[in-house]
Image 1 (cartoon, rainbow, N blue to C red):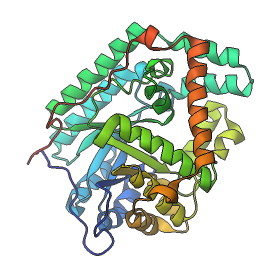
Image 2 (image 1 turned 90 degrees about the vertical axis):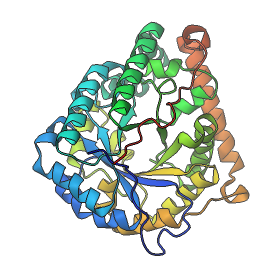
Image 3 (image 1 turned 90 degrees about the horizontal axis):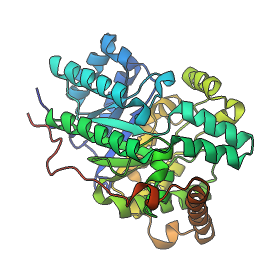
Length: 386
């Protein structure tokens, strides 16, 4: 059975007058039975669930049970497709075919079991296998090695072909009634704002030329100070809104700490990051920091906000309820309330230098890849009806 997909408005003052059009929360590692226990809290704050879906999901009896419980609670669910780490994990040029296989299998499963899923989410990021090479060059402090690795990945013809393959898959899924949303790293915005799609090719992650229903940009705090995070969000939420309009979303976080999650230890070993990897997994501990972050995004015109992630929220001292309450209490921060001129200039200069450096050292530009084209879906695409 096809499904309309939007979670109903929650009752009570927690969401009254909220300026967020859509609030959602990522869930990457939690077992499905543990996620099910959190559904009443998600429903209370009208928060959708962006749920990890892997090959093993279809043999897990708790998976279908969770999806049925979410429908009863009025919680919208997006299927976030994740491949095995050694098979590139994310959606990109190296994983187009395996992504197609997983997406078709998931769609068949949902339809066979009459399970309510609103959308598929394609997380378009560099493969961790490529990331390991790039990280090695950075650790070796070798710009030449870094540039050589990026140049080796670039093939404008293959990039156009793989982008078309992704669009073909998205059209197929839309034909079956699903929306298809994307997620990408904020760094792409610096290049896209300057008309340069070559960075996407160098990182094997098509983004701008893909026909997304919505596109979120991963803008996590990581090791930045609270003040720097305001400046970071201010810049990238503004760019996302300018380039993608109402389709733009921002992913904020990290919420809680992630260094205790076993899968991250496995990834650190495969990535070769060690302590440097774990340093990026110390998330924000204060719900007021999250409220401020969401307020900055709203003040920049963003109306779709995704929180990363349930995994850290449910294990934190604050608990899931307080994190979601903080997000829903956020109001747009205007003008001086989010104006950090010195830090904003630093982020702008860093973005410009990074993009220009990429051009200089790799040759990737409009000359090699043509003028950037932002693709949009057809009206009404992906709307599921009863």
